Length: 270
Image 1 (cartoon, rainbow, N blue to C red):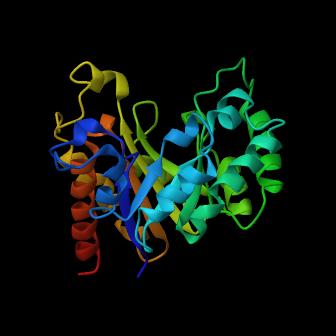
Image 2: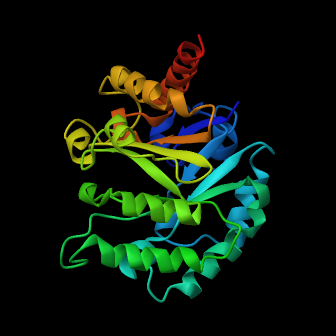
Image 3: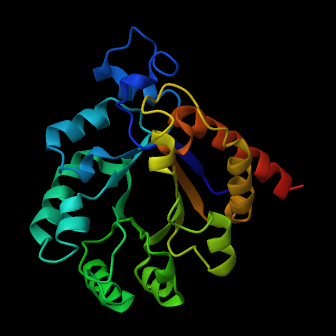
C-alpha cells in the first residue's frame, strides 16, 4: 500500500489559534504542535529566501522522526532568474537543507504564468527546464508546477518522466480541474504524486483575509478530487498540501481531505 501524507502550505499562522493551535502555545512552538496533527508540511517561506542551516536544524529538531518537509525552491531561481545562472543559489539551498536529512521529502519548483514576452513558445521553457534538471545534483526528489494550461503537453510530461520529477497537480483558478488533467494525461511522472489545493486567491480575499475558519464549503470538491486520486493509491505515494486560500482555513481542509482520501480508498478496494 502506497503512503498518503496530507498537510498544509506553511504553519506559521497566528490566525490558526485557537481553532488549531491552543491559545497558550507560543509561535515558536507552532511547528511542534502542527506535527502532532499532520506528518508533512510544505515550506512556503523558502520561496522568499533560502533558510539558514540553523533554522533548518530547528525544523528537524522540533518534529518527530516520521515527519517530512516539502521545500519550495526560492523565487530567485524560479521567477527572477528562471533557471538560468542559478547554480550558486541552488547549491546554497541544498547546503542549507542538509540538516533535514531523511526528513526532506521533496523540493517544489513552482513557476508562475509565463507570457509570450517571457517565452514565445513552450519549447524554449522546456529546453531550459530540461537543462536544469539534467544538471541537478542527485539523488533528489523534485516536483514541477507550471501554470500555463496550454503547456500541459505530452512533451512536457515525457520530459518530467525522463528525469523522474513529479508533476504537480494544482487546483488553481488558472488551471483545469485536477481530474480533467488526469483523464487527458498520465500524470505519474515520478515515484510520487504531488497535489496542491490552492483555490482562487483573489476570490477568497474578497470574503476574508483572516484564516481562522472555513468560509467556503469545499467538501464536495474535496471528495471529487479524492475520488480521482483513488486509482493511484496502489501505484505511488501521495503528498497533498492545502492552502488557506482554498477554503479559508487550511488545517480544516487538510483534515477533510485526509478523510475523503480514506473513504475513496475504501470504496476503490470494495
